[in-house]
Structure formats: C-alpha cells, structure tokens
Length: 284
Image 1 (cartoon, rainbow, N blue to C red):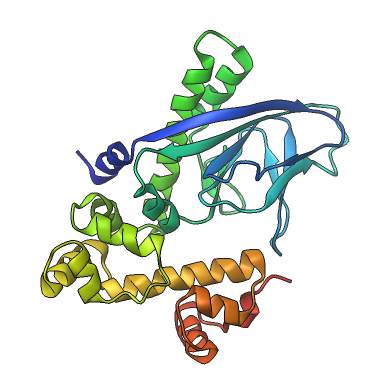
Image 2: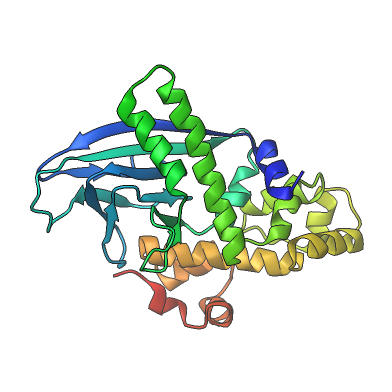
C-alpha cells in the first residue's frame, strides 16, 4: 500500500457536508462558523470569497472549491459585478479525523487550497477532477436516497485529491506521510505540534519516544528530510508567520509564539527562513 493511502487509513478521515443553501440577490455567508478544517464548493452560480487579511477577493465559479486546512476568517458574498438573477448553490463541509496526528498533516499543508473545476486554471491555481466535483454537485441537486452519505464520501476524495496536489507541487514532503504513522516519530511530531513553544531538544524528544538521541535523530532526519530541530524551528516560524498575517500580532508577540526570548533573535531567524523581516508580514 502506498504511503498516502496508509496514512489516511491511520488518520480515519470522515467528511461531513453540513450546509447546503441557495442564495439570490445580495447576500453574505460567514464562512468561519465551524472552527475546523473545512471546504466550500460552488455547485452553481458564482460568488466572491473575501478573507480577513490583506489578500484580495477571489471569484469562485460553478464547480470551484476552496479548502481551509486551518481556521481562517473569511466569508462568501454575492458577486458584486454579476447582473444576472441566477441563484448560487453552495455546499459547505468539514473534515474530521479519528486520530490527533491529523493536526500534523493539516499544519503541513497550505492554510488554504483553491481547486478550480478547470484543470488548466488560468490563474495558476490547482485544478480538480471535473468528474468528482460534478458527482458531488449532482448528488446535492438530486436529493435522492443516500445522497447525503454519498456527498460525504465523495468529499473524502476531494480532500485526498488536495493532498495529492500538494505532494505533486512539493508543498508537502513525501517522507512526512510515513513519519506521522511511525510508532516512534508520530508521537514526537504530535508533541511538537501540540506545544511548539516548549524548549524542545533532540534529547527530550528522543526520551519521549524511548529512543537514544542518535537513533532518534537518524530516524527523524531520514524520514522527514530535516533534522528534528530544523523541523521544530520551521514549525515555530510557520506559527509566528500565520499570527502576523492573520491576526496582526506584534513582532514581540510573534517572538513569544515562536519560542524566542528576544525580538532580535526571532527577527534574525525569521528573516533567515522567510527572506524578509517579520514586521513586513503583519496585516494592517
């Protein structure tokens, strides 16, 4: 069995399509009422996705889907330049997992993924199989017996496809898939993701999973493709960058989130990883 299939069986994904609504005229749908990994699919019509950051609006056409792997302030609104009276049918769902290690996978994925129905999207975003999206839409429109369960199962495939796209794009390392389900590396990764600010060392992580320091470091580096402390630093910087962009926290607050004692040390590490000072990442 391939690593992605084995991992997803281990994580026990269950998707729920919890919201289905038709909108006409001027309307707004708050997209953050479920604080979980979630998705929106435009079954018909069109709308605009507006995020609570400096990022611009995104127009979603019929058959487009957007996935949020972490909670992010956003809403869906009527297309401002759409003079037609065509209604917009929206499907919203969330992803749940039977294993706490799912947090490691979700944190390793981009915060947001835009899947266009057209596999050759003109704006460079990922395409999704038109057949899969159409099957979900058909079930939503049919209301036939079993359609709710079928939509849930088809949405499982939507998440799987998004992970596959991340692997192909290089935004998710193949080795991390096997590391998450490794009986020694998985608990260490979970501990780091649950408390990234803790002053982790290779020795403390090795002790947690009952391996020697050298054995743990070799196993981790071979599987993940980075040393344990490189991974810890990268995760901390990811948390800090998200806080700067999404919540507009101060550089001092971001330094605390990243586990740094001084702003200067944090700023140097942030610039080394991201290529620019942390202050330039703050949302207005």
